[in-house]
Length: 287
Ligand SMILES: [Fe+2]
Image 1 (cartoon, rainbow, N blue to C red):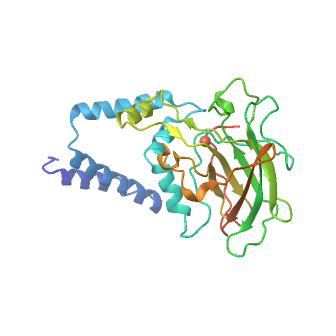
Image 2 (cartoon, helix red, strand yellow; image 1 turned 45 degrees about the horizontal axis):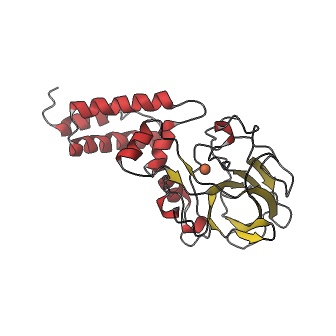
Image 3 (cartoon, rainbow, N blue to C red; image 1 turned 180 degrees about the vertical axis):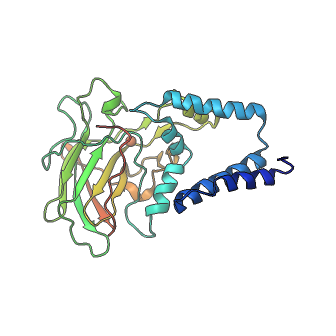
């Protein structure tokens, strides 16, 4: 075949992938081919640029390990991860937004007693008492037995899997709601931290002059049978860098009103659940 026109090549490639049995997979593969070909033609990619691109991917693979996924980080900093969350789950008017899972979610965090702390005693940092309610978005009824899976970074900006000085599963824990849908736990006041910048994704951020910082937050996954799993994060009301989140997740429907109460901080927060399929997201960090 002569590749007389670019279009003839695109059509030949599409035809070569026309025999995939699974209709969903077939549609994804052909759309990917179609849009990638269009993109390459529009960008007029040179040989040198293509060499840079495949070497960039090789270097991303080099940075990827069971505890770190540079490809997921790239998806995060170009807004793809958040777009998938918003597109699949957000409905107008919902009081709490859906967030990306992020690279630091670790499976099988320990179940902890109601009101206990996810921080070990030696962990430095100000404590916050978090309490609230998990409820049905439609009728406001309490959701009993919902599981809240929570995790956060220490005040040095590191999650326990990144920091040999923290005990295993520090600042991670699972809690269950009671018959009134309520929960209580103690955490650290959230800390801002930069996403890892020692790999190719860091290069991209520097070229774009984008700060790598994530505003201070605590992660929550709220899970209950017959309800859509709520993956969210709580940011601090009034934090000036909410609009500049490196991974485009932070928004005003995920802020908590952290208040000083006596000698400690307090946060009251409600998690509305929509009827649907309960499904746990895949943990980027294995247990
Ligand atoms: Fe985080």
